[in-house]
Image 1 (cartoon, rainbow, N blue to C red):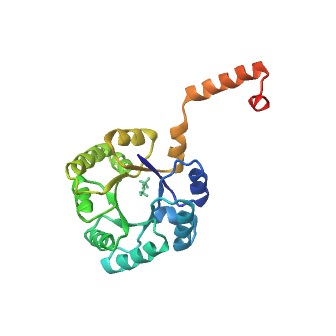
Image 2: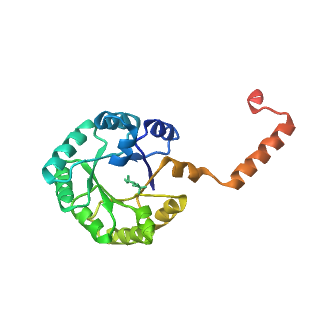
Image 3: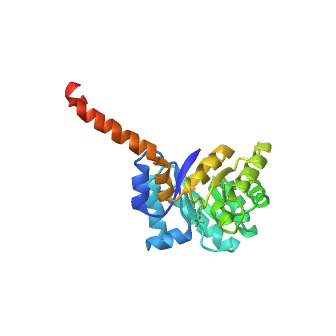
Length: 221
Ligand code: E4P
């Protein structure tokens, strides 16, 4: 499973990229707005830090303007994935950009039917939002199971399932069990993945016991 970080915060992206565990980045207009940075410069800088796919979302909602915006974004770097909303116009843009060789991430997917449309439109990624479905009393992970099952039946569908709107580590591990290709997570959730109280307790014990030996590995090397 690939790990993307869902943020437009460059410091966070640099920090997580340094772990060697980061495969890509997703942004959205709300995340970009928080930075106060000019969007195209920001995307260029993120693409310099991370070589994997960097999702940058169009701002318009009509076909012509979305397509122009998407082409501008795609020119920033070869690893830009243009993010378009799951609307008829968005899917038309997706098909056009995909035919031009640009990766497209179709976002705001909330049903299996929508995911089928995204695959037929040639999306590189489809982003089902699990957390927002949970927020309205549904089970977001059920949607991931449905999409993975459907995509698996059609080898011609090459679209990757990019689980979005992740709120906790269980969303990540269950998505992995279901065979989703990518999980995009806020930085805090990526950090939560590392944690286990028994790891902390065990490490403290090992450090304490080692100190009792009075030895130093580097002095013996
Ligand atoms: C996906 O690409 C979106 O940016 C994101 O996952 C939305 O998450 P939210 O529901 O926490 O805003």
